[in-house]
Amino acid sequence: MIWSEPCKPSENISYYDHVISITPIGTFFIEWKSWKEYDSYSITLKSLTNEEYIGNEYTLESAKKKCYDYLLETHNKLKTYLEL
Image (cartoon, rainbow, N blue to C red; front, side):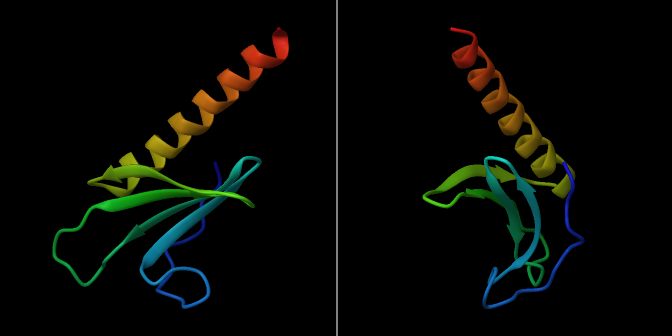
């Protein structure tokens, strides 16, 4: 997965610090509140028709890994479905 550099809050994209990764199933957003000493990294998948909360992690790298695992799981489900 290709991730953006960490971005500051932007009214049009996210009200929190964030990184994004655009994938065929939608855009993954990892967001955090940088003004807090300790904050979790919230993960959301936004598609054209849906917004799905994926979870929280305590490091940016583990949040990225959770997104990768979600994408891989979706791929495996689609592959199984298409082989029927």
